[in-house]
Amino acid sequence: MEDQELTYQKSRQRRAGVAARQAVPGALRPACNRHICAALLESDAYRNARIILLYTAVRGEVNLADFAARAQQEGKTLCYPRCLPGRQMDALQPLGPDSWEEGAYHIRAPIPARSRRIPPEALELILVPCAAFDPSCRRVGMGGGYYDRFLPLCPSAVTVGVAYDCQKVPQVYAGELDVGLDSFVTELRWYHRD
Image 1 (tube, helix red, strand yellow):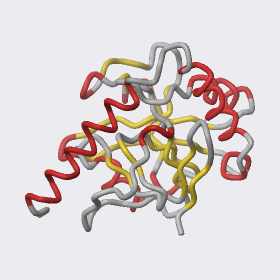
Image 2 (cartoon, helix red, strand yellow):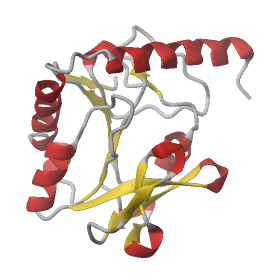
Image 3 (cartoon, helix red, strand yellow):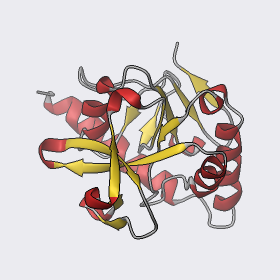
Image 4 (tube, helix red, strand yellow):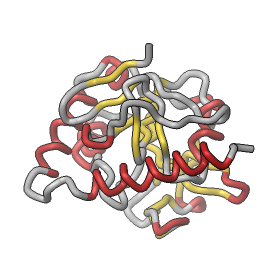
């Protein structure tokens, strides 16, 4: 159980990070998204991966639509998270355009009956959104702990956080159960875990 000070500081960083990403000007946002998608598509992590878990953007998150379109053209298997009871998560590959619905937290998610479940150990690249991150590749998520529970189940996956550079903080307030990522990509640069 986290102590109250850590919970407070994470909540503060979460609010500030969400405000920062939502404040990215509308005129700049498409260019930032394109830069991030291009950097991901040029990475070894992408080139070496056949099965990728990504996310559908909400509340100002980096939009990965360009990345998804190109990855699909190149024959990659794309799957998306679906929140389950007990703050667990599944990776589902939608099997068609009618395989989507509004899931938990108003996030677009695959419909299980119209999707294929991908076992966590089969994932080779996982793209993770965040509220805030630091140069050591630790992140503050939205507070549910879904990725922190899911990522340890994915031993073969390279984990890449996706954010705007304005979401970076000097140091994330991380607890024992908060899982660090291998790297982060923003519109300005890559950050790699020490």
